[in-house]
Length: 444
Ligand code: NDP
Image (cartoon, rainbow, N blue to C red; front, side, top):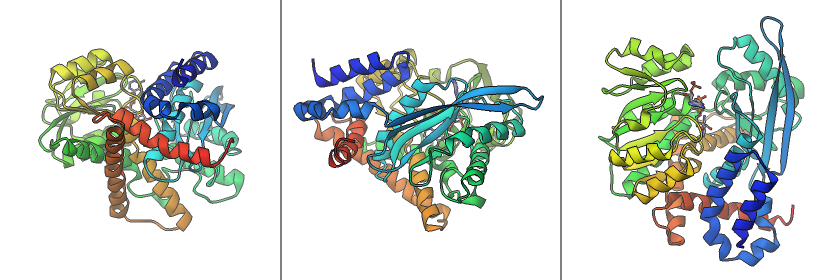
């Protein structure tokens, strides 16, 4: 049996009931097959892949907190410190009821390659909790965040592990967590990114993932002889990534006609009103049913449906496994030319294969949404320098990073005879640097 297959089997046997983690490992190792097989004996002797798929450390802890009625609740907190070969662990904190160890491990594993692709010195990690901030008062969210950080603070630090936001963790949550970290540790350091501007945050961090997604998409289309200007796009999600993806897509001349949340989706044939979306989601923390109040000509539908709308460009920006094989078939039938992932692993393996087999340009999340973590790393640099850069300076660096990622994944795919396979290209380009650093550092 080949070394890759052996390791894939071991991962499933050793980590049962973690299907998302298996899926992420399979996607990466399958596309690294050609690299590994070129040097299989050495990889096997050094147990390189076993070390890559085993987190350096995983921390699981109790998070008790008290609600407004005096009731005590207990959530589970996680931090998976996956790989620090190229820098301190870096990756977001997800607060969502679906969170479990397998989800955090899949995200942490993906993060290793994503962070490497940015070209910046950051290792891979991820964390979170099964706490649901939806419907909670500010005081309840604060109580949770303080309890969560009381434990997490033992394991993180500006040079060790620097968490950031993710689903359910926005500026409010980061603020409460930062305050508690400072109180416990007594140090004012850049231990979290996504901070508010008044206490060490970076301009353009809020916009970074969505904007970065569009910078990469624009470049990808360009190197394939296409222009985003004038295209119609469908976007899923209506959170941080989706909002700024819609905004930048429109600035680049595309018309975005859908957004969604976990209850339903909006179709606005005239193009999504991004200011209305911001007010609904960022200010009022309300549901998308509100959108029709701003745009009476739009439609609201319960359930799923974004991928059934005819579009040139599809940008999944909500969550994992939200674009299935049936959706991929519909996109292809409707003439979609590119799918670029704003979320992490939103496209199932079968859907990805179908899109690629049918000539759709497909940019995987670990490349396409790397703008968030890249700008987080720029926030770390500013914190270390004790300086703040202008919006334009950060945005320019973000654009440069995304354009480089696009070319690096394109080049890596070509080098291994897989031109146009950006999944393979991104995995190989991210992997090469990490493996080089792991080899240099010995068996640790
Ligand atoms: P937010 O919490 O701001 O928004 C998430 C959006 O996705 C919401 O519209 C939410 O709807 C929807 N959603 C979440 N879970 C589900 C679900 N199970 N089914 C259907 N819809 C769902 O998160 P972000 O925008 O920050 O993150 C979105 C994706 O992008 C995630 O995969 C995240 O890991 C990834 N990402 C985020 C980065 C960042 O900088 N924020 C960086 C890189 C990747 P509802 O409000 O109803 O829950």
